Length: 394
Image 1: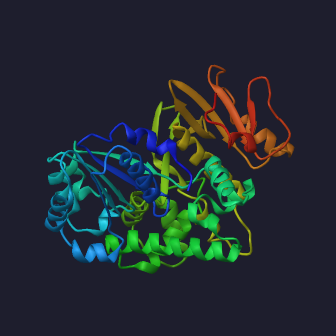
Image 2: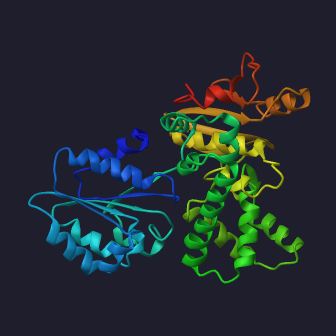
Image 3: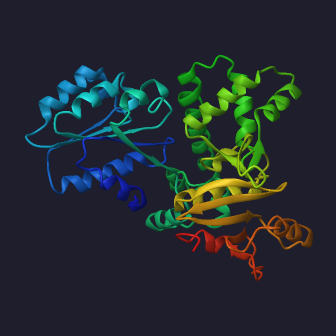
C-alpha cells in the first residue's frame, strides 16, 4: 500500500502528545493502513507498543468493556511511554472512558473509527480538549496513479470519474466485481453506520431519500426540494426529518454540503446547500445502463481534490449567477467554474459569463475535460488532466 504522507505528516507532530489521536473517515478509506504506517514509524524507536483491532472477534470477545481494556493495557505495557493503537474502537462500548483514563498514565493513544458513533455529540463534549481528530478520505487521482502502479495496473481519468477512489476497488479486475464490492460497501455504510446507529424505522423512506441525495451531487438542494420529491412519490416525510437525515449522512462521512456565499449579503445563505458525495462511486452505482453522470461527477471530483489541497470552499452567488467554487487559502481567492466541455459555443458563453463583474485581483479559473486551451486574458483554463496532477492552484 502507498505511503500517505499527506495525512501522516500532521499526525506526526502529536506522536508523543497525551492528546487522544482520532483517525476518522468513511469506511474503507484507508484509516487502518495509515494507523499501521504510523505504528511502523514508532516501532523504529521503541518496542513499547500495543495494537488491538476491534473488528477481530477474538479481541472483542476478550475485551468487552472499558475496564477490561484498561486492565489489558496495564498488564502488557512496558516501562516508559507506551504507544497504544486501537483500530475500529467504536466497536467497544464506553471506549472514550478508557481512553480518558489511559492518557493520564504516560500513554500516547491512537484510535480509528468509521462512523458517526465515533464522534457523536454524546461524548465529543466529554473529550473536549483531550483529543485531536484527523479525517482520512478515499484516494485522489495522484494517489490512484501511485497505487495502481504498485499493483501493476492502470487507471484513466474516466475510470476515476465513474468509480472514484475507494482503495480496495482497484484490486478488482472486472467491472462486475468492482460494482459488487462498491454496492456491498454502500449497503454496509448506509445500514450499519446510519440506519442501525440512529434506529431509523422507516428504512424504505430513508433509502429513497439517500438515493435522491447521492444522485444529486454537484447540485443545489434544500430540505424543501427533497420534500417535494418525496411527495411526488406519494410518500410522507416532514422537512425536519429530512434535515435530520441529511445531518446523519454528513456525520457518517457519506456526503458533504457547502453553502452559497452571496455578493449582495456578503454572507453565507443558509437555506440552500450544494451537496457532494465523499466518493463519486455513490452516484455511479445508482445509475442504470451505464448512463453515468460524468458532468456532475467531474465537479464532485474537483471539489474532493480542492479539499485535499487544503482550500476552504464555498459556492459563490455572483448576483444570481452561480460560480461553482470560491476556493480560499493563504488569503488568496480563486473563483472556479467546472464543466465537462465548453467546446459548444452556448456552453462556452454560459460558463464564462458566470465570471461577469468579478474583479481581476482574484484568479478566475475554468476546469474542463477539453484538450483545447480556452484561456483568455482574464480567465485561466485548466485541463482536467493537468488539474488532477497539481499540488495547488498557484
